[in-house]
Length: 225
Image 1: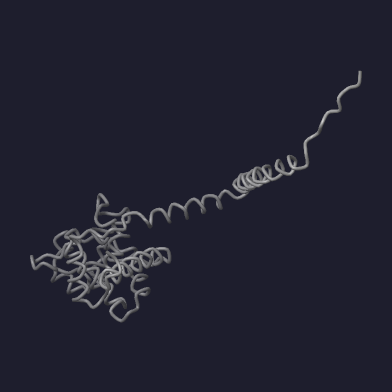
Image 2: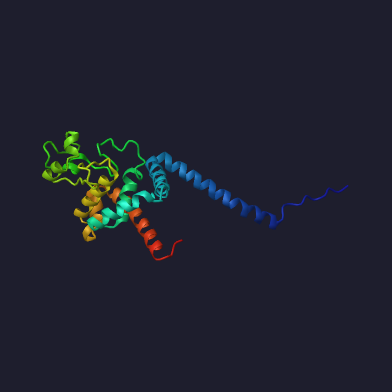
């Protein structure tokens, strides 16, 4: 009795299997490369993760709170700068004042995160270093003291004090500082850098400034509903 000859896989089936196995091989190779890179250079993985988080962070809280817009516009008109620049700084500094407390570990205070010596003036006795200083509260919010020592703090609402924790005072003070740092002459990047001497800070504020400007233009030209 003769044995039946076993049939092998057809050429078509073999080709199909190869096609299906290629993506698996590519994925396996890629994962292996990533794992090996992570072992050899963990800083690269950390940097990539940081970049991804930064992108996600930028796209959160894009809406400007309506209650702040009239203040931005009023301050911007007085100091000759774009109001969207103030919104961008406010977004970066305290997430539109949702940061709690409104006090950084370095000592920056209020809605727009002023160092006390910048707010009151670097001529104030004891102002050096990062600018935290040792300024009594009554001097820190006194418009006359601020004027005397060349600070940027502003009493925007006429209540007799210039308070970085008052939203109007804070935004007008930021407008004052940005204007005198070059923004009134169109030197936006220079002004942002003066506000916080970090290239990353400049990049972040510029990103929101451009987004807010594009949104403003779209609204004003009727391109956005």
